[in-house]
Length: 241
Image (tube, rainbow, N blue to C red; front, side, top):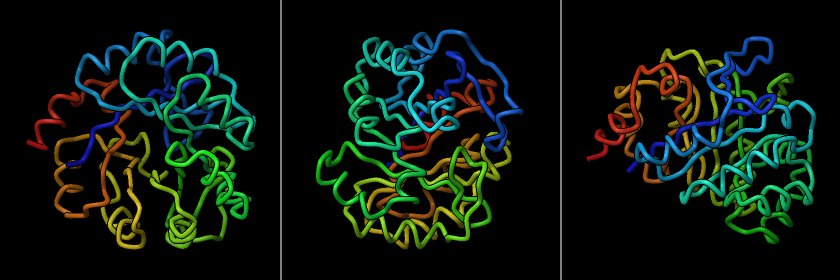
């Protein structure tokens, strides 16, 4: 079963969505992330994906107070990413109430430290792999590397990470469907759990992911389509039944 995971992206304290991760292509959907989180929980979400966009661009958490307010207001788990470059950053978001901390740029730039991080924080660590045309992107998606996403996935899997969140950045925020082939490639390259992200916007997208029949594909993050009212959490959950 693929868990439906609504997203809350934080920028200047507000709920926003970016197109393809571009900071200059932003749409604001609300001034109260806490109320948004409560709404997602009321609609049946079992997990919420929170990204500190300002943190991603600045290289350190910026919205710890908002994250704490969100985690205090809901009873479901929260996973948080964006600017977590040090162990202190990880501790900060976990102390703010997040159940999982998502490492992105650090997992790419300092993989040698990842094993120690996983030893220290265990299943509280997830690795976010963001890629365009199969190549890893870092630093808030502003830098495209020459490293293949599949190779990075294999590396972090070998180091013991429990979950990889794979985002196809070309489809993110576009509502044109997700990159099914890329998700298939990632799932087949690792033994750990995988969460799909980027372009998931319709019931058909969830069916497409489900039809891959990959046991380690455990979740799908949905953002803009929910905010735009194109689909509801309930409709996406129904596909699983």
